[in-house]
Length: 445
Image 1 (cartoon, rainbow, N blue to C red):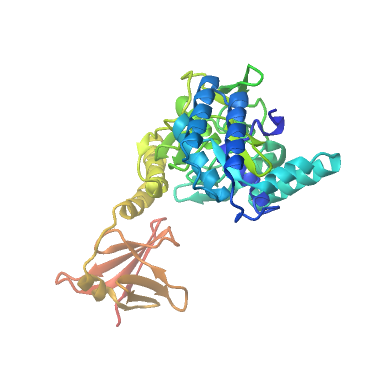
Image 2 (tube, rainbow, N blue to C red):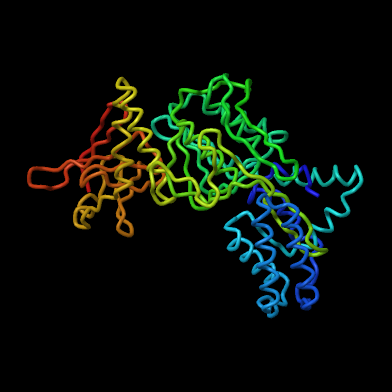
């Protein structure tokens, strides 16, 4: 039977929520599995597929293929249970083309779920899971405001709003004055649709928006999710939104991305996502193995399909490690077009960001010529990099914006400009500030 409390848990995030169980009650993995045990496991997996998998016909074909592999002796050499589980997982995914499948050797999970029968046990189990989620701050890893008043949210998972709703509301209201928002899902493996619903609701006005539908095989029913009529704090339907993705972005994180892309509410920047659109459940395949099996499928109201097997294709396709910088530059360029009165702000930050995107190389001889003292300021050269220091303060690396102009990442409102004579000799260091102020000190040594 399907465990209803898990039906809204998605893919990789479900593993994260239960990660603390993985090391508990483990048996000796040196036990060599016999042919009879392998056969019993394969038969159990095939039966669970037939009973639960969202696509019945595929379930039968995959189950038969697993049994045929067993008959051919493909699993016979795999006596280590973890290796056996890994091979069966590989076969489940390749045969079904469904990345949500997984078989784990985890006696601890089986024991934990079998003994969780009393009310007291259930409460303790829930409290353990909640404590683990709190230690991860419910996936809200980083909240900051980047140059140009662009908000940045690094979200590693979508936790259930019954527990994480207050944290999510605090996070979203942190950005109530931002001019744009970047949501980083590059390391987000999924989670609960309720968190998708809550965060998305902040990005629309109060009129309900149909986000997604889910078909569930066991009940033969379709459910729907919509934006919420009320959220704590301020809605930002006017906010420019950018979502960062990678090939590791999966499941519920893909739904969030797919929803916003098809609603034309966000610009997606990064890599095509993993391609998992099926809600899952975890069921015991034996007293030692746990099967993760997809039990439903998403149906987007705009496309009438989903991202299963294809992933979500970004609007701006760049390697994931360049996605944040690309999104930041794009956000400032768009804000400059939308807010001409604030153009000087964007004109200040964009050149430094573009220099990071396409680094400028300055000749070693030129860098060496800048070394010296300039009043209270000192420039040094270390390992081919220039460093700036004022009096006895900290050292900051100078990032070239041209042969004579440098930025400092830690001091985004300040630039260092080296002034030269007509003969090309370094004469002074000019400090340039975002507010237009400048100061200058002659080179003294």
